[in-house]
Image (cartoon, rainbow, N blue to C red; front, side, top):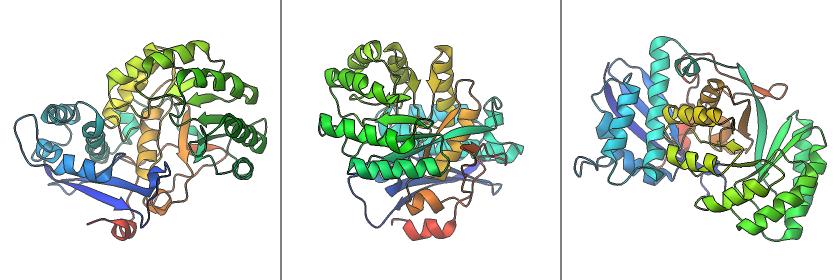
Length: 370
């Protein structure tokens, strides 16, 4: 079996704004083979940038588009093809958007492998530690604390056992920060876990102060309060925080996640559509497990990324939570025919061969960019 083509499909809603909502656009990857088996993946990046990285022509040996790295190759040689893509993009890659683009192809290769072998991807990654994961509803803080309260109450009524609020107006003032978190806790009640995503809005001193202030509301973790380059600040924060510190969604390399572990973070959050696909996500998760830390996915995209997240998390001993984006964007809600619903607070790991998802081609056609 040989790879015959790689499609990079840019999807975008008619209107995109500055809200940190990754469901407004995406890049879907389809890898085609000469046996008619097609794998699907997703990239969480700037779609135009990632598409260019995949489709770029040859400049020289270490500067070529990812498509050129895999065309004509056996799609089951996943580790070798990952290395070919990494080596072929050294000149402009070694992390960042290049590694994000690798994610989509790698994800599609695992989808193909599962379909060929008649197995769900998590089995190919080493087997399942669990067949379902507890979903935490992931959404942005609303413009007012009162609106956050109403949304939190609604999520609790829908049966979520955990919810995360992030970004939005957090960081605009101390009063706003405390009011938002207080009302989120009030809306969820005492029995639902609360996660806070600060959205890289604090300096180190402020983050240490907020961690102490937020502790009153018993958050499960405080996520990404600092700039991702501020590793020294993360070390100081982790050493002085009364609550767990989580981060990692901005990282793409194993070295970046190693630095976060060395800084003392309690929770690593690799995004399977950013870090290089399941091939790299599973390595990051096992690295966290070796240091007795939690690994929880970051995912704020479509059902493709959610399915891929379920598979790599299921194959880890230190993962039991799933970030479950509840944005109502049509890309988030309708791109895959499989809805991966939350039932009694949990999402089942797909048992079908491959990732266990199929694209709704009408949705692809409706939002496809030229």
